[in-house]
Length: 149
Image 1: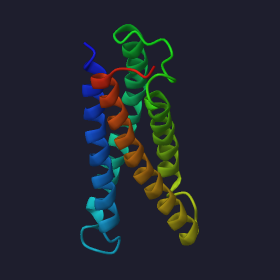
Image 2 (image 1 turned 90 degrees about the vertical axis):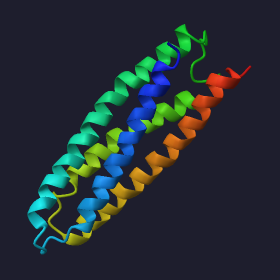
Image 3 (image 1 turned 60 degrees about the vertical axis):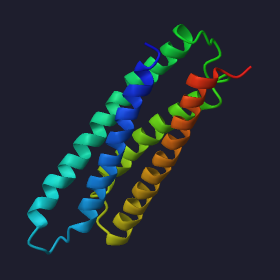
């Protein structure tokens, strides 16, 4: 039972890669090319997957807290987990903020403002992927080495 949270979150991290991949596909489609009608479908898939993953991260975060408290017997969930709880909360916050930034990209009328938002959106995604790697590392360390003293 203690492997339920790690397995669920690894699945969600796999979906993070799918979000990244479809976002790069959207970037690769030129608006003036014959494939431009396909761009809307890929962008809709990108947004739908991002919303789903963000929504599933909330019960994953709560399940992680419950798993640490009930199955590993750790009461200081953020202190004795090598920063894993802080990283998980941070990744959830970054995903929520990136979701809102992504939705606002098409709003600015100026191309330069839109490009700046898009660049910020990409940067947040890279930061999410890096933080997720740290979360994986600390999570496996907790599972196999135990909590900190």
